Image (tube, rainbow over all chains, first blue to last red; front, side, top):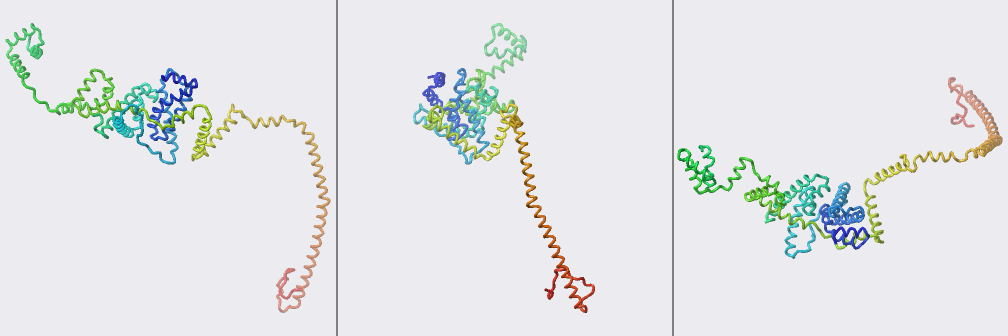
Length: 186
Length: 292
């Protein structure tokens, strides 16, 4: 079922449609919240909060807009709000930054998964070493596949700035990965 | 045909790109010009000689001394090259650079690989209970109330443990009071004046007569009480006080007179021992042996 039909069914009050929407996009939302929060527990809470906001905002969502950019924009805003809150009122105990754990990969053999997993961990380590803006643009464009126009609207920057920021971030990530593992890409 | 034109067309002639007429003109010129004949020989020998081995760092050395290293420019274009948006000429130039620059070539390979690997990070699996928790928090049902209560409790607990909660609460309270009473559009704007107006609307005129009567009654009662008090308490008390004062005065005079008599008696008995300048003691001032 395409997402437009799914959303219409959700608006009609069909709980099964809403469940399917949640199952379809839980991975992407959780991946984004994890990249911002860097902690499974916080990321899970944020992902849940995001879906609650999506549920409440479905009525106001216009079908002419693409759903995924809207959903990711909402996710990003929720994470940024939460990070501001945490910065203003740090938690009583340190929240550990976690290593990359389980990633979804449904169509790969065990050998491929192991190889892919090691590359993912390498990329995550390199991403951890980048500044927030660079990591964010990599997350939105190269990981989540948003267009530059959509990213520019989300970040309230010109398209040219988004493009140059994206190029610099990719080169920076590539350079860091080469430093960590010179054999990557060969 | 002259020497300058011959020099310009020499290479084309050797490569066979000239027309028959042009070749005939050049041949005619070579028969007449010894210098151009010598030049023709030199150029043909040079072209026929085997190419010398070019040093591997020659290009980079030349670039270093001329325009500088092109690697930064190449690095800036790697992403467009990988994305295929560089155009034919740009892509050709990039390929030419990457063929000769190992570092840039390695970097471009990493960027190519990342282009394939990064999308695999787009999804992460939350735990198995995630969907049911989201459904419980969104779909209407009895669980929604529990969830809302839990969230409300957790939110409240988080709020009251904040160090500035008291200040923020006072600030919010003042703001609420301002909204309720202080602005022109507040629902209770001017409440004190309204209360006074309501009080003024009460039938005060109806109360004035009984109030006056009450005032008279109270005044009469008070005056009566004062008179009674004066007659029964103040006057007798005054009389008693006067009596006591008179009696006290009388007694004091008697005591004084007696004391003077005693002193006179004592001083008359011991004229040799006492000094005439000593003043008589005060009444009541007794020394040993003077006790009555």
